[in-house]
Length: 178
Image (cartoon, rainbow, N blue to C red; front, side, top):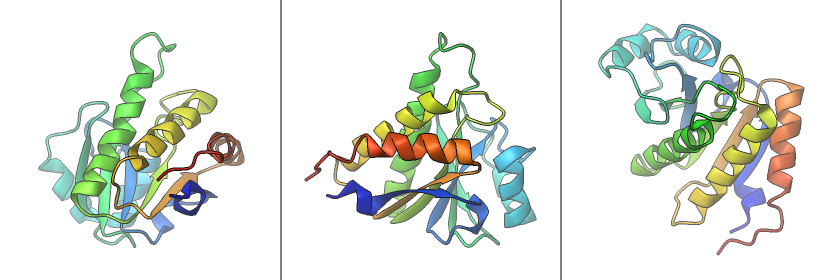
C-alpha cells in the first residue's frame, strides 16, 4: 500500500471537503460552541445540533458519528482531543485515541474517504509539531491493518499547521505497507 496515494495534507476548509466523512474536533458537549466545531455546525445546519443533543456528549479521546446534513460529507465523526497541560497528563495517549477511535468509526460505517483536521492544535493548545507526528503515526498504524480507507485528507487551517503535517507525513515516505 502506497501511503502517498492515500494520505494527503491540504490547506483548506474542512466543511468544503467532498468526502464521505469529516472529523469534527469537538468539545465534550458536541454542541458546536466555537472553532471547527462551531463552523461545522453552522455549515451542516440545525439538524446536526438536534442529533448531537441525543448523544449525551463525548469523553476526551472517544468519537461519535452523526449525519452530515447540509455538508458535502454524508457523515460527521465527532471526536474530542485533549487540552494541552504540559504533556504530563496523558495528552499524547488521548490524542492518539481520538484519531484511532475516529478511524475505527470510519471503518465501521464503511467510509472510504475522510477529512481530518489538526485535532487539539487550536484552542486546546497542543503543540503542532508533536500533534502532527502523533496524528500521522496513528493514521499509518491504522492503515497497516485491513483498512477500507482510500482517501485520507489532513486538513490544515493555516500555513504553520500545513508545514508540520506535511513534514510529519514525509518522514513516513519510506514506509512500504503491504
